[in-house]
Structure formats: structure tokens, C-alpha cells
Length: 150
Image (cartoon, rainbow, N blue to C red; front, side, top):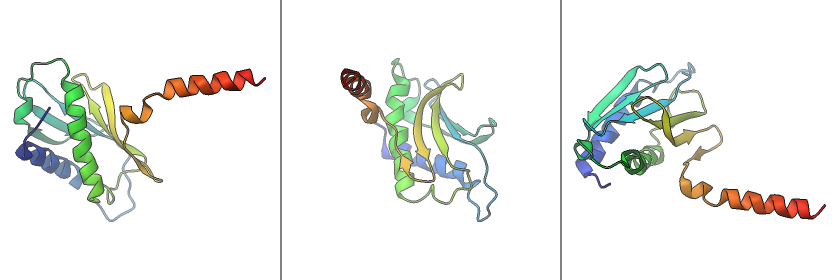
């Protein structure tokens, strides 16, 4: 799915608005994850925390009345790249969220579709299918070789 620069900027601004309430200079860390709920019918992206408190919302024109069944699969890389851009710009470094915390893509029933970004004390990990591709086969081969040695 391709989205316009205008829509990408609107999503970025909405994320910044959502995160601004967690930018503090104190050590009062909040325990929460940030949930992103895109709606293919209205085109709305709702951003909320673990307590279902709405942090921000925005309309993404390209998502309005999206017809295909692969909506979340199409939206995931868009949101992941925007979050990566915020991370690279240092926007996620000053948040008063207790680590580790995640940015999570959720569906209408608020069930997790994908973890978009995990922020940890040690490192920031971008989770993707490419990272895990072939892992099952590698583990099976390793176990097979291990068992053959006995």
C-alpha cells in the first residue's frame, strides 16, 4: 500500500501528539504499551495506551473504505517505517515509559496483530518476518545434528 507524503506526515504528527504526554524530565516511569488501531472503513488511526485511554487519532485518506482482506498486512510496514523514522530521529529516547515497551498493531477487537517496535534498555529491535524467516528449519537442523552426535 502506498500512502502520500501528506498521510505519512499526518500519522507521524499523530504519533508525536500521542507520545508528548510521556515526555518528562522526571523518573516517574509509566508502565504501558502504545497501541495503534487502524480502521479500514473510516480510515481512522486510533492511538491509545494499555488503559484504553485515547492518546491521538487521525484520518488516513488512503485507508478510507479499503476493500481488500489484507488491510493489516498492508498497514503494518507503513506504521513500522514511520516508527523507525521516529526512533532514528531520537523521538523515542526521552519518553517516561518503563522499558521494555512496545508499539503494537491491534485489530477492531483490540487483539494484537503485530508488534511493530520494541524499545528495550539494551537495544531497539525492529521485529519483522524477515528476521524470523527460516528459524524453524535452522532449529530443526540444529536439533537433528545434536541428536545424531549422541
